Length: 324
Ligand code: PMP
Image 1 (cartoon, rainbow, N blue to C red):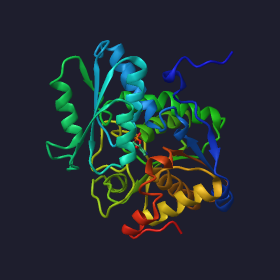
Image 2: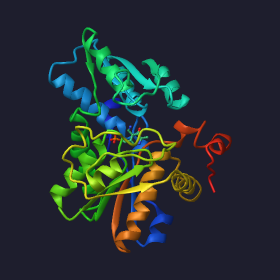
Image 3: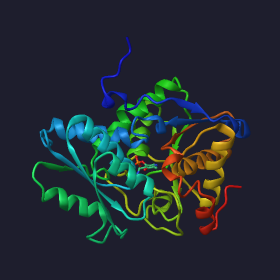
Image 4: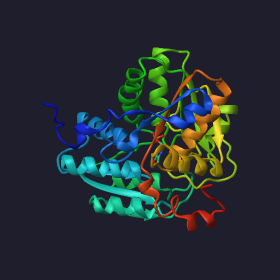
């Protein structure tokens, strides 16, 4: 028999998919880890599970307790699923700029949702800081604190990185992905570098994020903006701190959109904008490295979460973007 013991047991062990067209065009193996197939629909299920398990093990989260988090959506969705499965309550503080689909999903899952104005991290009313304050003022509540809680990158070190190594039989030349918290990029990079220091580790960054400049020059500076959600950061989180990252590639929105629609039309893979940044950056890296290399990236979440934006031609047009 092969039976999973509930929701929690189905997180992870996602397939690694060869992206046929992109591989043929570059002469490299471009592989996407299908994180959109996680039971909560995104790469963040892994971090959500590790954060909750860590809090349970430390005795911080007790039966009937509440998990509080500031999140752009996917972490909240993962947390809400796990809270339901384990009997906890969930309170999510989310910037108003995030898609309606993600807010609706959180409410459907029974999370208490507090949309707040999107203000920079340095502002005390920033959604992340606000979620920390709310948690500290509640009884029997924890703050998931995904940006600086190292249980996040540990999830990717122990599971995502391990799986990529197993699935490629150790035949991986490069690892590239975008970051929100940095948990995925850092955790996998740490695992792969330990196995083989020659694996090239690269950040894929959207415009508007300060991390491209951080990796290139050591200084956090940003320019431009992006319609992508859940990725890019203005600061170096604890999860990113000290991660072995060799280089960075920056992708502009028009290229991201082209790749998202090519994934849909040519590969039959329906994913969100961060996956577009990742695959576009993997292609750029393949061109830099030359044919014959195996490059792994992440297909973070489903395009269904962005139906009203990325997959709505009128909305795209208001941003001066088009799928072609
Ligand atoms: N893609 C999407 C759509 C996300 O929501 C996130 C997390 N916010 C990421 C990528 C990046 O994951 P991480 O937090 O591990 O850097």
